[in-house]
Image (tube, rainbow, N blue to C red; front, side, top):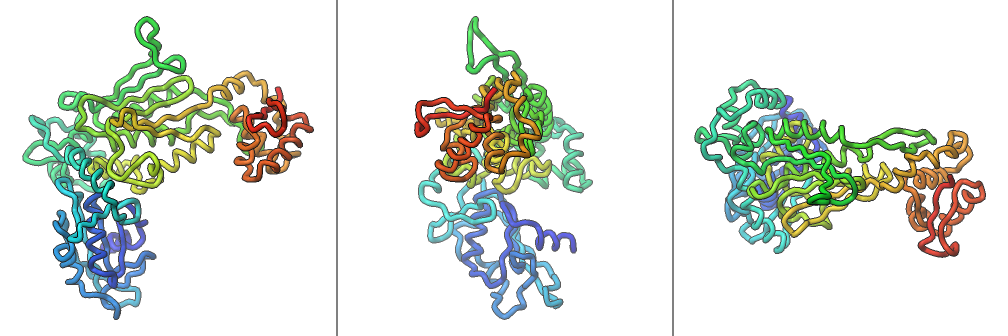
Length: 474
């Protein structure tokens, strides 16, 4: 019990956990219950402060526990599936006290609204009130979300890979029987597996859902050809249970990535793969977790070209997520899958994954990732690898002038410019200004200094030409 209380005290608040002091208005509790139910479910703890201090229910400003227990009935139009639990604790003053827990399950069959028709959604560590268009999108996405809960006809426990279940038990720290675990976690009912249970623990996925697979294709060149000019050089399909398929796909894709010479800090050269692993692996995991599995006419496709990697997932962006807010917004179309894959450390509770894809690409001196919705029926992530700069690096033409001695003679801004020119090829003065976070005149001053040092040269008519580019000398 002590370990459990410590978890509620000190675990970071996020998608699946929130703490509130016992003086919060009961209607606010109803809002948080609505938010968790409309997302992935979660635990709402009342009586613990944001910083982990146990304030309990005995302090003067605390409301009665009964008010909170009644809040779902008082303020919600329809209560989700949940349970409440009262736990005896010792508060921060060393006195006996209590805290209240709400364990809220995801709502699959309906949106949980308040009696004033407002709707909330848990997004990272906030309960966000939705606009009318966002509510409409949430309603539309409800059908796809229920699909992972549906029973798979003719499936049974015989379809389960026991090794995968044993691994999952180890991650959870439990030794219960396979059947009990699957039923307790909602992966099995009435002796049949749910869609989520089948995807996670069965190697017979292709028998029931032939489209629930990951297909990797590598092309020669920068575009997809067909017929006599067909340019597919690799075509591999991964169709085992998701934990196995993820590992197999990850290992294989790593063998397909080329390497390039990267100019790191202090003028040292480093050999790295052409894409940061976090970027493409996170993109693949997101495709697996958020795809529409009820769309059985399509599958996840990963296409590798000479200049880019494309990860395509069936189903448009879910609920309140848009191309504009994809770095900050979160909504899990398949919360059972998401929760299970969180145990493997492949899915993160907060939405920092997408933001980190941007950061990792930037750290590799690559263009920002591009998200799109082809035909409004899929989500595609495109990672570009800057093939022009890579080909120059392969020739070794620019590396001879970049030495540790050179870096010792450069100031911080000059060094940043040299690194970026080496890793990206050519840049304009405005791009350089963005790199060193200074004005364009300051960037031009630094560039002129490097020109006088015979390190860089330029293409363009006049020094004020906005299209004028700078590059490292051979």
